[in-house]
Length: 376
Image (cartoon, one colour):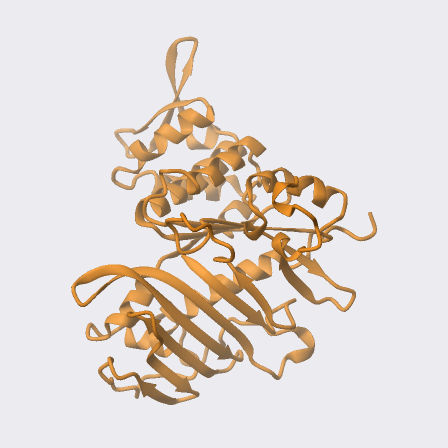
């Protein structure tokens, strides 16, 4: 689970914004952070930028060595007026790890400063015994290794890739490989495809995965989208069986509604993430879905089905979702008159008496939290 994240000088986010996803956890919580985090705000307020910054940091740490060529720019866009300064990120995440033959939850801390041309600074620490231990510290091309890490040859370390991503190519670099395998899934682009043919193509691949159809089916029945079974035809095409007049009728994916296709895509990711205890980032989770289906998806992460510590981080426009979040789980994006995104949680409004007993959606609707179109 992601516990803490800071962003500075990234797209519409100019100043440092601090996001604490483990704030005010209940004493009886079985998770190291809140299992659901939701972002709300007006259009173009910066919600997507916040989610994309989080996705970028993990992508860069894990995959930049193999995904970027020597002359490629780092896909990180600074704030317009700060183009000469590096973007800065700081993330703390918890992962089950085997330390000294014992599996336990360990915190990992990653700090990054980058321009589109190069890495300026990069640090990876971890906390195997509750105290900070250095893994890698990098200042441009100079690398320092922690005491518990075997040094590796860094001649292939490029200025546009992460030392963690390079180190993960070596089996001896256990901690780098743990970080590389820390799974961050995202459907940030999938649900934005207006091309139905593309969604059908994706689902044809997804629903052929061994065992996934049986795991998805109970959720489809609860959601009442009319699908009774999912099968593969003799030609390996996905067939959705609907019960109509007490008979089963075969439907190709292309015959399903846009809402059903969107729900199938999200359920595919959710089932996999819940099973493996991963993190899923979804932009505009309610797109093409009834609000009750969205609430159902949120509820899965707060239910006993979430045994592995999976986490959902999403954005939404439907304020109905706020009713199912605690103040620490509800974050807002608001763009000021200078075009700068500010991120803050409902829990920051300490002047609201008995906040935890109040209806967060109602408070938002009457403008108590801001983060709404100012001219309407």
